[in-house]
Length: 407
Image (cartoon, rainbow, N blue to C red; front, side, top):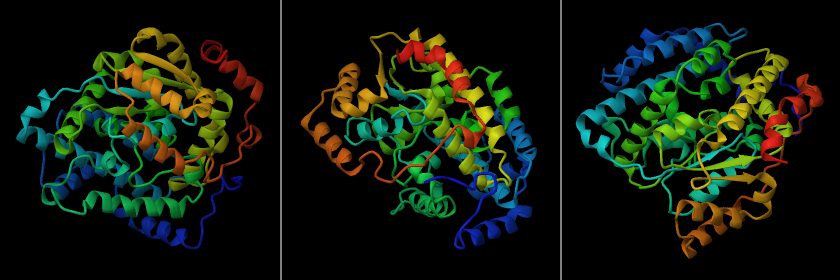
């Protein structure tokens, strides 16, 4: 599939009415912190958002969103809904902790963390390892609503899952080619970067919108407190739905290795590696394609330049900090090696984590692989030209990373 409408998005006759309906709702969805907080409190019946420092971060992000050129009404509603859910998650977590303070004493034994750029095999490895009952993971629906509303606690089917079914259906209708770049389903194992968003300090916000002001603010602050907030959420989720040892994954960790090690000092980290040039093109395609959800026209070349800068920063940070975690707790996996021997890589991760690679685990992973062969959904064609990029420049900028991890 070649995307020929990145700058001027075209929508199907089924998708356009949904966007029009969302656009009509925009006047009732102000991107304003006070309005959002009031709505979150009204929806939950709660008023304690936890540590109050989140408000400054929320205000910075909201201003960055309001400054986006070409922000359309459907985009306003989309961001309003996302931020409202994050605020509700904070309220629900604070309430849960107040009623169950023992959550803070729950141990998080040696989580296994996958750190790598998108398209380097991280999602495949994450879901492959999650297929067995060895590790605790979070499906997409749980990552978005980790804590149930009091009135919905214990209901079956879980209303959170039902809501995610609807959301995924809308995404697939409005962005039918997104699944070719990153498949998302209700039960798809998802990243903890979604949980970091609940503390309003995460790289996730950069992928959702072109917000350089937010990036500057984010990079100027130590992320340790927000990773600790993440750890608290993991304890709370363990309290609610069980599990003992977490399997985590996020590209954000590439430039936060010291922070990750500080907050989870016994973590096991799997670093994934692949030629960063095609990886960068694929990631830019995914981000510029999804930008149609909130703006038109889409400044493709501007977004592409931003993400090349950002990826260079992330990879250089990894080169600098990789040895923070020694070989007793970390491993480097090249994409081609992973594709050539998926079971072998799984065994290596299990061995590093000190977990027995049982027949049950092997069978579960085998079943997953049978139903998730590479390329089964198709792919999106990319080129340097479609983003206004130069391959030689990219090769030069990513050279330190390639020299360290791929030579």
